[in-house]
Length: 527
Image 1 (tube, rainbow, N blue to C red):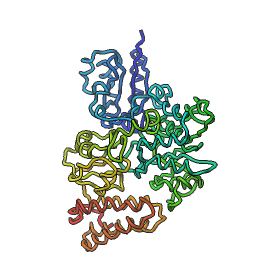
Image 2: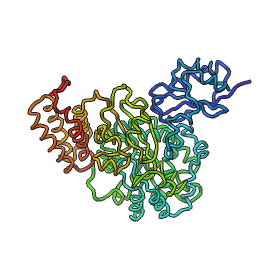
Image 3: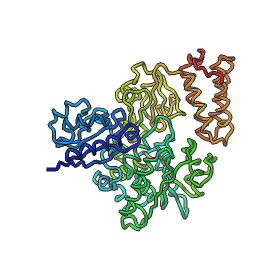
Image 4: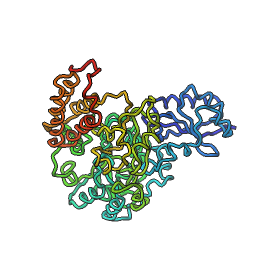
């Protein structure tokens, strides 16, 4: 009798980068040799990246996980009962056995709302999505007025997850109140911050949540056209999104007359210009219009004069993906999570020198130290942790004395730090913080749109000043000059690119000043 076994192997970028495709092909080959039919589901990663590729198998007890699995591990896994109803004791004998997936401590301690389906469903299966309450929010939204939808989002307390943390409902209200023949919804999927990957994982693991959220946003502000502005470096997300959009259109969840409601929303993916600055909403719109991605002065606000001069909602992937949950369960439900003005959950991304890097979604209020050690497990190198950068390449470097801070927009801001997109990058005690300060300025040199002088020229001069400090040329004078230059960039730059670039430099000077006083070991100093 032919055995049919349901196996899950991720198809997202993270898993593919460490061999998930090879594992999939090898498993299919070995199963055929044993006359076993594998119902292979290419799910998304659950975000436990040190365990990828993680293979899961449906068993009478529930889904059981093994990882990290390489093709060479499969013969011994099959011998231990991977493809049959082996007893739990037989499975546990294999060194890659992780137990029931839902009982893995890293997952069990989380509060997953936005990422509730990540790793559980086939990303492009509408049946899977609907079986996990997908599109419940849209069905409810179709019976509500535009104002009622905006009010629901206001009640939730949702703030933009892209970094600026502006209240989503307020932005939507402005667009709704602005009369226009055409309005737009833009998803900013140009995720460019170092150490961040939540947008990519969401799109690759649960694309229908983003599609549903954007459709609801269209209904709320009376927009009929949406664009996902996706960074060029995400080819797998592009393929998955386009497939999911096609499925949604074919089944009446997108396009004309959505679910026979008489309402319309069209959606398409547009590929980004491979520029960090296009993550800034006005530069993004310039790029969408076919122009060079350069920052626009404000006002006018995009909510009033945005894409092609029309009222436009610009939200990030996580913000829009969360809308479906808010509409399905109500704004009050979402507001029960979090602290202060930071309501709901945040998908924190742990990267850098950590033993257990990955995605941790939990309510606002968890401390940085809990994320770094209870989840991240401390440094991968085993050396003491020295510094953590929060909020991407323009975020401050934080010393151990600040790791007690709660992960909350206002709590971090009060200490001169930013939460940003929720990324944390850890460094051990071998890091040279002068070199890290130089990197942030060099990053700005590379990525500045060049429109304003403080950003364009300030970053270039900043690199030169740090090189003189590294070479021990008039160190004290150049340190003073560096501080003055940072103040000028913060006060005079047109957008956050130049205005925030000094944050990592200033924090490195404040908390790790000793690294600016010693001769550099870098052989390229001054070059």
